[in-house]
Length: 218
Image (tube, rainbow, N blue to C red; front, top):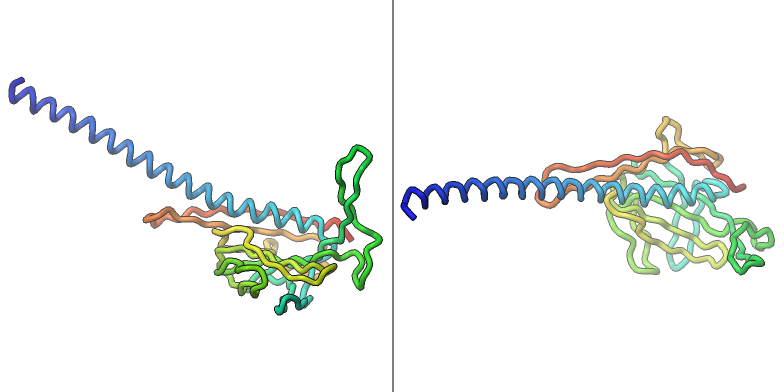
């Protein structure tokens, strides 16, 4: 092989490798952006899906209901200010075994106590910290997240528990139409905003989802 042929082969090889490298870099960038977009969407839809499902089952919204248990006190509020929070009461449910052996759940009219139809008080809000171990205090609320915290008070046994629903959520809005829901509201609009950024990337992907919800239980 002559020098000219060798140089020609090297030139062709360099061009091919350059094209392949460019294609690989572009593909990785597209994959990274798609992965980040998926992360933002998953966080938003997991949060909104669970929240909407529970609110539809709720008896009423709560505002200013304080409960103490496990050495801690938590206030179940519904607010639209700098630290948005949505709180509601879920009905006490009874488990029934049907004739075909399957299990069904229904409101338990025979429940006893001061609030016979209340089974749980539930609250959702944003926090910069995840829920800690069982028995610890609930994380403080803030305006930017990125964690969605769910606090539950079991009325029947008098126990508070906390959990992290999702991460990557940057906003929780309850007044999409300009009206903040009150404790007597039966209809409300919930907007959840999520954001995620790829490693070493300045671009952030945002996903916003809104759902109108009606409380069905009394």
